[in-house]
Length: 330
Length: 199
Image 1 (cartoon, rainbow over the protein chains, first blue to last red):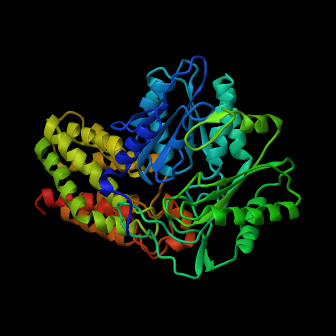
Image 2 (image 1 turned 60 degrees about the vertical axis):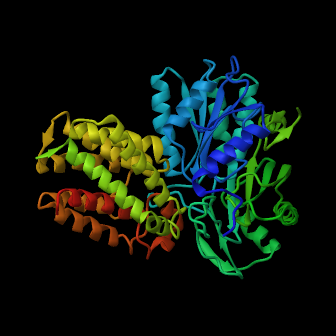
Image 3 (image 1 turned 30 degrees about the horizontal axis):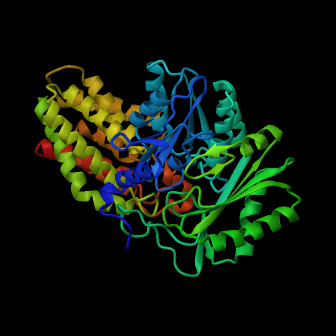
């Protein structure tokens, strides 16, 4: 499989060096794998730290900057970062107002962030945590590792980021972040697997003429495989899967997210279908975002995330943000 | 009696084994995971071997504690904290004795495995590393060779199980029919132990 890399071992380091060169407003520590907004720590403001495996760009490094994350910790491809990274990040962004860890619900992320929280607290940094577990495809039960954190991570990072930028205290920022997570649900489909640099070939075999329903963002297969569907059919299935698990009384933010290899042309067409279903179901849409935000390397496919918002959350969504991956209002 | 040198050699043998089997571990981690288990452990145990050579810890406990800390700082994912905790707790239980016997190692490993179960929440039958480690510790009282066989059989026995922990659990029934990569790498760790003991 052809990839635009040198060797698999240096993919993450190479990407970090490239990010640093492209974004002088970021402090990129390539050796220690931490991306920090250059003006950190910001006096009196809560620091926001997230992280996860590389391969989901722009998540999370592309969301570091005013109005969103204070720092991001990139692990190896599809591999949770190590506690050392999060401790370093927390230290860099704590102005004394404390730090919120935004943790996607994967065993590795949870374990490493938990360890980091303990270590950071030993250093006198106040840590709060929010768990993102929006994916409806997995049943949360004693028999699974729980629901995965996927598209809603973007909503949490943006809305909590705006709250922190406003100067809200740690407890409030954390509570708001949890509220965003609780009000968000996602569902994704894959038209292809992805290829990791280390493996060099697709992570699973998806024959032509078939798709995977209920996929995550780490190249694992989904809940079920079916014959290929049209954009209309996929939108029906995905949006209904999300709405089955939430009952929006309020308008929603809609994220129509590409997995990485699906052209914007297709994503926008898919959005038309998603909006059609939402309209038919009487769900008002406050804002829509279409694009590659929470990706899975070169997986073809898309996910839909809906987040039910109140006035405060919507105002915070609209608030200015300046990051590599999301920018408006400044 | 097993001294620091024995434990250093155990870690070195594990590093060699993981290096050798990295592709296979990654291949196992593909259908039911995210295809990174082999490279993660390879990176981790290479770092362990390098650290042990540099720091030269002089007790069994210190060797394992240092190895565990290095794994936590290098591996990432769930494997880092889980393997790291396994070795750190085992090392801590061994204390600062210059030498330990097999019985003491067995008891220490048992506390390490318990710590992993507590951290990850897995029980036997969940299709995880625990399915190789628990039988191995039970058999270590008989011999190192028995522990190796028990670990290998435990890893093989994960194949028909449905995963209830970790990334494989997202697949539900689709995880059935695939050998668990974590149990497989645990079997490699125990096999390296047996090899170091000359069995």
